[in-house]
Image (cartoon, rainbow over all chains, first blue to last red; front, side, top):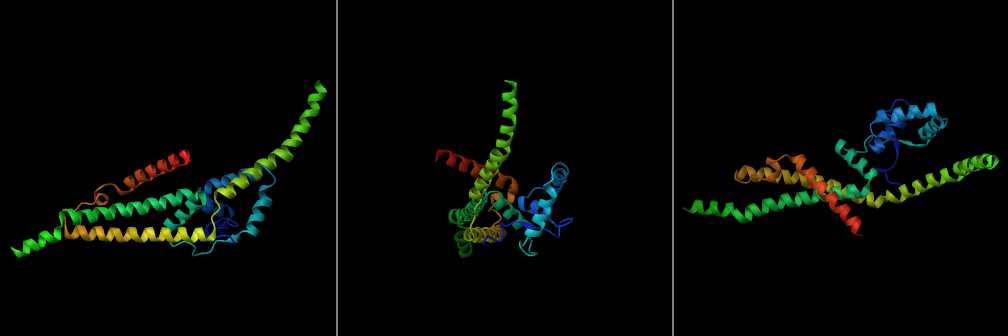
Length: 124
Length: 105
């Protein structure tokens, strides 16, 4: 049982014929044009390209329609497929970012104490 | 001498095709498998952390906006400076730190 987001799918919706090239583009994050050009070059230079295309086309599953909520999430999982360690670091970085921002708000409230000065102002 | 070379060429070619080529292919397949193996549990965890980070970021935006609305003297760095630029720099620093950590291990 492999996981649903890091498995290879063929992308029939965005594909030209069976969606294998579009699937490779979706998996790797490389532009689909380069994949198709490479495929065409392989078809003319080697004999294995066409059988391989059909093998992948019949063996790979079609991409489920609602796999990712938005484009940002799709990009995130593309990054995971390329390098899980790097994306884990990125997630950690965004947590640190939130921590920094929260600390900024906290230090503002602690150092300037606007509520206290507002209270004093109202007592005058 | 000439015949020896003529015999050597097919032997190296056959060895190259039937031993060298599969060797290289299998070597990279195993490396790729070990490098990017992510179990279902890891994937679920990463998904949860990613969603959590996004939610927290959205909440932090709201909180900052609320604080700024109440106290205009509060100037969070994110709202005044170029957001994406700063984030990229921090990512870069993070990547460099990670690379350094890997080297020292």
